[in-house]
Image 1 (cartoon, helix red, strand yellow):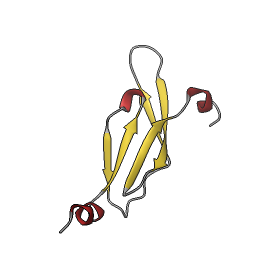
Image 2 (spheres, one colour):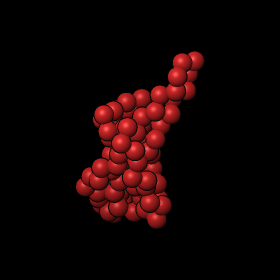
Image 3 (cartoon, one colour):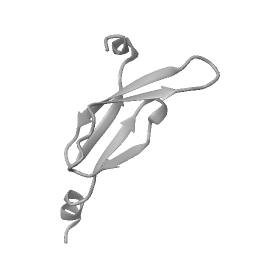
Image 4 (cartoon, one colour):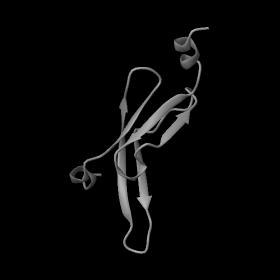
Length: 76
């Protein structure tokens, strides 16, 4: 069995790019659709900080969640 064939049969892989989740990876079964946006809330002793990651499709199975520009966060 080729490596390409075995990757197609496995879970979809989603990478987080930028912000506090940079470098983290999420895997999902192909039958479990990935959300278009992930909201991450950072709680600490100060005010809460909210980051939004938007899904960008990449070739293969999965995608990248890229940190949204903070100027666009107030739109939604």
